[in-house]
Length: 223
DNA sequence: AACTGGACCAACCGCGACACT
DNA sequence: AAGTGTCGCGGTTGGTCCAGT
Image 1 (spheres, rainbow, N blue to C red):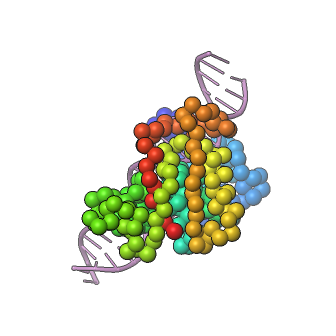
Image 2: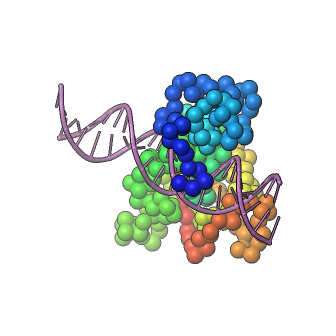
Image 3: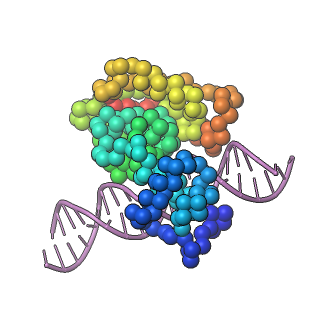
């Protein structure tokens, strides 16, 4: 199992008990987050640090919102996903009180299906051509009108080709616009670096393998 | 009432990147 | 510069719940 291998004999696994939650919460309240490696022993937990971190971030953190996603949150996730791809932590970062895991699960269980139902490919947020009726095939932007949603064409970024500065700037534009929510009449036009442009932050996550083959397709977003 | 399949969600796993030595 | 430890992220899995039959 490699570096993260666990010894199942002396490690709890599976669902967390209330006592474990309490121990973890108490410890973090006292000592703060961080040092996940040594936390379990210090807190008296038979878990690996990774598991503790996950439990805290996804479930125990006091600022978590929990509960159903609001419609504007849904819309924002869809837009951000179109912008960022499966970069759940970045998307969750724009949704106060939501975790990447929560957003990811919600996407996979609700939003993906929703888009598919609407005839939109959830991977690239484009209308699936085979679902277009002949009369609107030339004007894809009108194809989703049956859902009551309008579509908007923007430049589709390639996955992993969005550095945090750009994301921040782009999304900040959304937030700066007082009209952006709840109507979410958002203009997500973003400029992207050319491949030769160095990353502003040198952020490692942004140097992941890139899907540069996408020829800046038209992207469909809801309004 | 019992069974079944799908949906949902918490948790786990593997990998990549950074920090430190 | 190379090796090692730690952390964070995204993908996947498995258990539970619930609606439909």
